[in-house]
Length: 117
Image (tube, rainbow, N blue to C red; front, side, top):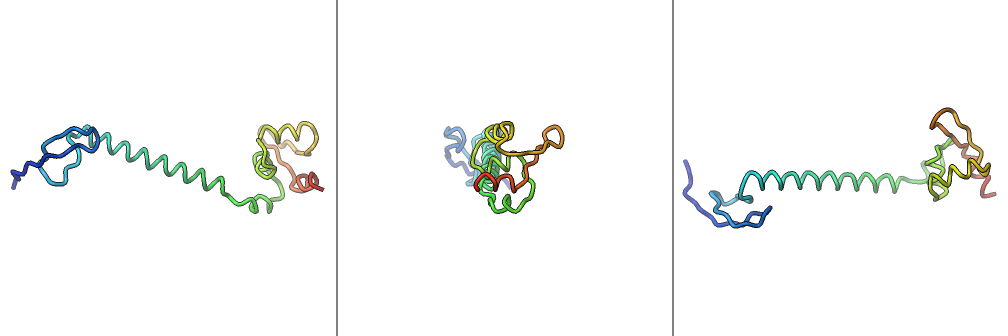
């Protein structure tokens, strides 16, 4: 059964007026429907990425305080400084650290506590 309905609509993607064959048609062509779907998927990915970033930013500092050995990034987070500043403190001797290998630098939690005593 085919319908003889002809409804004048405006495409939600491009804004052009078109004749729809059903009452629920939202786009004038397959191209506009695909573009709208692509935008929707992209917006979902951006939203998910923003949520992940917020989750990482709001990760409790208490979790870091419980660890005995910290990475340079975690030290920078505890000291509220940049990672480069944390490396500067290590290189200048302000913070004692152990380099266990390439890109494996660990700092004892007690060294951070000594800074504030």
